[in-house]
Image (cartoon, rainbow, N blue to C red; front, side, top):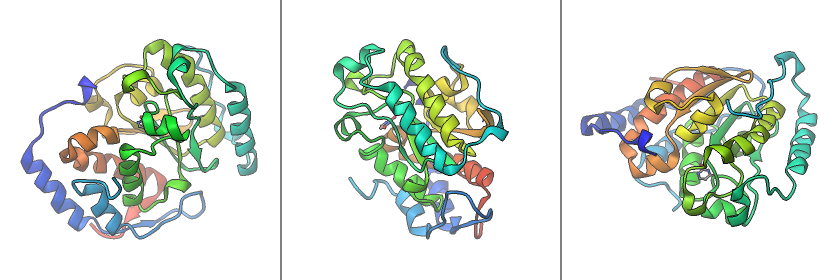
Length: 262
Ligand code: URA
């Protein structure tokens, strides 16, 4: 979490407000795929508003070649098989404190996938990722891109809630992440967005400050990987939403989504 903390410039925050007003509505540039455009100007206001509207590690297996992409109807089946393999998991210590395994959710043929850190209390109670306050902000981020949550796939580095929402330990992340990599290989998203330093660290296989990873496109298992701030961090420091929005625009460009005006 220390990696997230850096000084904030209030002029930058004001610039962010200006940018929202001029942002315009994203439109779909690429035909096909599993994302659908929707009206986004209100959604962008919601993302940038002060409050959301509603309250390479070990075990990594090689990514399949792009040509081996599964037909859409087989991806759901592949995800079901991964969930079955996980079973009532006791592979790491996190199982002791969990209520529910939070496998991941969304469109099995999503072109856009988000990866967070691990379930919090709300997620642990409901068995779904990003359903608490950070989840509401993630929904707003997705809507600001002109997309719907159900068009995306959402998962975490670890599938069980770390006690007190602490950062997952390396052994926990390395034990769990091979299942996430299999989910990525099943969904085969065109774009992956790593939400925060933990997701970036375990997807890219190296611990680096977030600042050095943001703002560019990484390659990961056949997808374009973009690193941005975790929504929970953005709730604590909303002035950084401008930078997150810049990251999401990189993701939009990779997806062939573009703003209708600048
Ligand atoms: N934070 C995460 O990283 N993942 C969730 O699912 C919820 C909050």
